[in-house]
Image 1: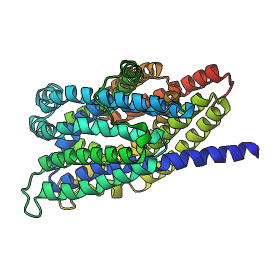
Image 2: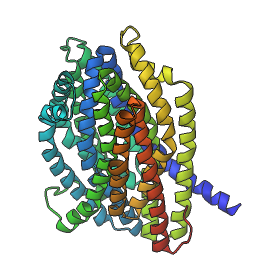
Image 3: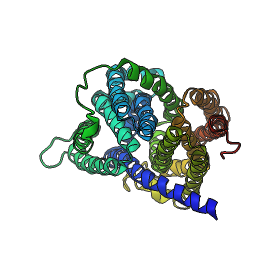
Image 4: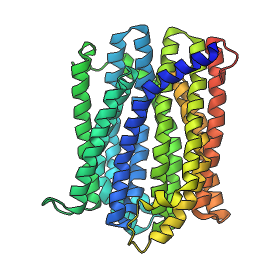
Length: 455
């Protein structure tokens, strides 16, 4: 009975912290979903191009977000130790590193067509994707800075603010997309360029709102005072913890981006169906991501307080919550796939039946990786709370690039299973990563706190 009561307390703490993060991630995903919905109704070729362009953009973005995710456990541990100066120092240097990376990442985004052509994409799709990225690339720096501030607030357990700012951004994005894509209220019809411009404006607005909130609500941290001053020690600490997180993200996102490239080899219809199915899968994934971030904060607190039992019990509850949601998602994907895919396609589009048929098959495969995808991201969150990022990076590289991508190619093209085979390779990579990371967490938590069982 005492154990049940303790688990209830952990579940409540994780949900109080995690639900606003989940809501903010869903709102962020809705920005991409809005782009896909409106572009799908505007032109299927534009949807295919933005699917490809966003896959390339996301690879660069998720690598740079490693510094933002490093801020989360570092601030959480510093708060548990009562070290407010350290809170300020690591967040500032997270901003420095993110801005520097974002500046470097803009060039390959602006001139991306040769890369996509070299990777076998159709010339028309590659050209349209570059048109999108030449505008969307300017949102890289403000987008990464927003990620740092979001993780800073999450570590301070001010997740409600993260939620409402992101919801505001999602609503504003829908309005801007409608106006700029279709040319409403006297604005020119910009198509996919309008979607890109809306994304950049949203990132800038989100950064302004986030910075204004932090300056007003946490003046004791003086986060933006003398922001230009370099802090060598904190810079190196964030860099050391952040770059393996970025490369871990690269390994996982690279798996999905490689799948998008392979889908492009099968044609625009398959690529469009992949983009729709991936948007739906992303919406369920962010629930696990929110739980993962909450688990990082809770694990960071346990590290700061040297509380092994709290870490062990919190890990069990986080994994159980993730598994429970995965079960619900599996039911949804298997019972109403046509309805979900159909939301993204104009009923009068002549390509609708073909895209629906492909998308339904992909959602059935997506149901297979719900449990393992949730488990691997929650395990990553727990390990980051322990400030353990380098070995998980190696595990991710082996699972996704060493096993997952070859499996996708083999099942998709060598065995001739097409798009479903490519997605089956995702299942293989994610399952291996989940197993390795869960074992790693058990071993590391046992060593640090001398507990014999954590999962």
